[in-house]
Length: 107
Image (cartoon, rainbow, N blue to C red; front, side, top):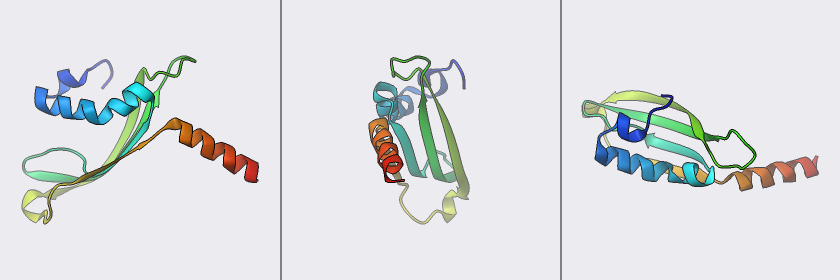
């Protein structure tokens, strides 16, 4: 969905919720990992996982875009037995860089 804003894709209320969810990626370049009900749907429940990675086009480090992947199974709403839930993990890139340095030093 290139050159499209959330507000062009979604109604105002869901767009605001998604904007808040994705804010750490947009403002700080954090990786986002989500697991659970990854979309809101009426007749089917999409249960799975999503990862979103920041993209930058310069040395300044501020994200200018993102790339993501969602993998889910669609379950009929009548067969979904628990409350919809979504676990979200934000991973700062500084932690990734530190972990990579530690692993390289241990080798």
